Image (cartoon, rainbow, N blue to C red; front, top):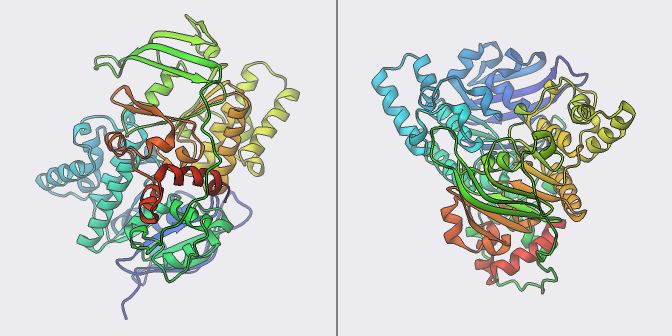
Length: 557
């Protein structure tokens, strides 16, 4: 009998600062060469499970451990974090905390340099992984200066180059554009075939991860394993909906069309499903007309970083009351830079109008009353030690009394699902929870235009729905909401307009359902059709009509 690669035996872990264990009596076996996805709602303990594997627990995050953790039958807990790194390579959810090198090439090379690998071989392997992940042109840039998706790719290269027997990824797709995520998964699949390595992926984007042809899915709930088995068994059940995990888009649509999902079917592979023609009911949804008052408008927007070519030159853009706009495009195309220009964080040439009146020489504080901006990386926004103080900071800076601050903060903490943690230190939160804190800190200031950079990255289905439904209510009240996102499902479900950014220009500005049926534009912008596009082909339906049906019915499922 082949010895398991990893074994958790009656394993429990309690953080030093917590009153209750985060992991409780875990029994889990992972065989050599398996592809395993670990999923679960936010705060379920899935990231802690990964940290126990890579040694961050207990070497960085101290606490009390009970039970056993074995690697090929040997006590993994007895190994140092350095010894652990030779067995298990991991890419963290927060990539900024993983960079070491001064340049992209140096960072990717670090693991091999640390192992005293011959220089010529290091250069060969660095060149190979930079090429495979589309990073060759960025080799001499600082990792910290890259976009979120590019940073994610650098972290991925730094892990893959080491070729450890077990590769552990915590939310590896969180900041990648749809095409880059697809290519990264294909790369992992090829790597698995070529090396026989074991893949463990902690991820919220289950539909994308299914591309790997997973052997098993492990569902973690409240620190315990709620499911451990083949993907199709889980997909046919109601477990994902029960715990608040987003199931594949095409499965939700099939359920709403009355098609029975059974465990014996290849539910994880849409292309393998034998589907009959399925008639669609007539859609009652009507596209929102662009009749709202223009809140903010930019004309001739031009910007360049010093000593670099212009990123934007003569860009025109307007945002209306009551609309929810998805700003999409490939990694590194300037989406976050545009958000900083619109919110006044970066100086730009051109004209800016607020409610029809041109505004000149406006201070950052004055712009912040009109346009709020939530950054992609929460660690770049957080300045306080406690959650309540972080959310209250902007109100206090505006001179509100504590009597006025308290109810406003309490209301937004409830909206963002943070009430149970209101007295916690920020250092005790997960990456996804920190993102919600930074969103709350801007929401509480009530700007008329709100720009959010990847607001749902790292969020489970429950918090995704809660946040997006709240943003939809803000739009219904007359706010203009701009979402920088790589999530095509989010764009389909909520956006009234999709702005496709490509090389400093607006490549397309149209209804998302129509955009998702334009493969030429999607390919140029590194986007991808949702699975509804392929489902429509299989059941003989129009892709736009199916998308409208889903937005009307599936979103509420």
